[in-house]
Image (cartoon, rainbow, N blue to C red; front, side, top):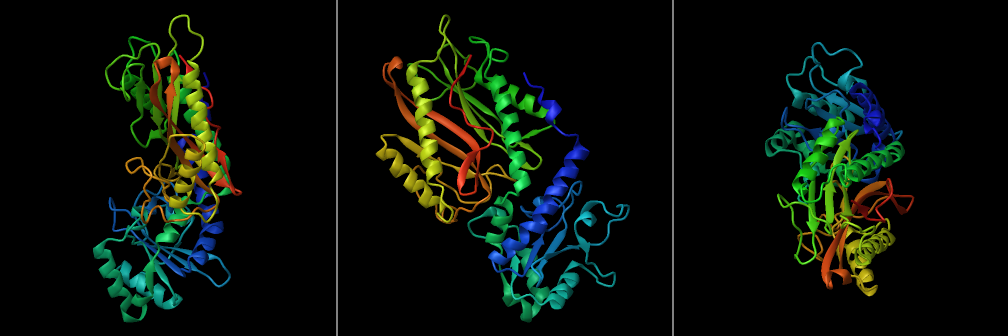
Length: 422
């Protein structure tokens, strides 16, 4: 077994790397996005400690853990000024925290943050001021009602009409991955796959003794023992000949079970999301029934069809509907519920179907279009009849983190094409 601990950086080195990535995005990605969305000034106005804007954590360097108001202003030369709207923190060494990336804008004569913001707006005179409010995307709805009122009062009648929603800017910032982040993402998925491979082995699973719930907790313990975190509780379940649906909980795993897991970890501010499958061999058995291996191939076929329909500019709803039509034409019984992933597990970007609303267009979140250099959890299932199980119908659930870059889908760390055998 790989000792994944050797691959995990110490916390101080993680912080250094995260800060380099952040600076790279602020300098190379943010100016492009502000120009694309016609926003001259972007205000990220976290209410305060424990009430941060959802986008705030993605904008501040390590080890800065407290909320601050941030201002970004597009310059005529195409660059972006980055300003920290807060009083200096006593005891913070120069070059640490926000000072490493942001310039202090506070004038000691100003009584509060709103006076500082009002002065900066007057000085910069932006044509458009983006603030974070949105009906459809929680990521872009961080401005509280109270803060909105205070902002409008500070801006006054001259500048308040220039305020617009920064929804698409927030989504663009959160979903876009830099080239360095994309390069590192494969390694994160290698870790996720390795942990699942270890969990779906005789090292962990003892048929007739071990339960799916115990395997799920083992996965969580393994992830957290590496100094990583789960962004949701791992799940493990089984499909079994003669029993409809999926079983989980306290019933022991038995030979002949088709095991399935759903695992998501976070490292270096990036999330993974993976569903893989294993077969528990009967005594004397050397491989899974052909029907089950064929079901996984059908799942891979559905992945291919979905990937072929990833075209920049298409909306999530368009990608889903075209994929379902193509899959049904190929004789598959598909369900698509793919989501963006990145800084958040269920991330910013276009929703491509929902599990709870199979085949339905998703207003708002499904109407957002696909952009290059973004990442997705390719999540879906396909139904298949298993001859060896008296033609019982099962669902093959699979999920793999992938990047859409250079106009094509790339599975980060590969994808499962063969069942694990226990």
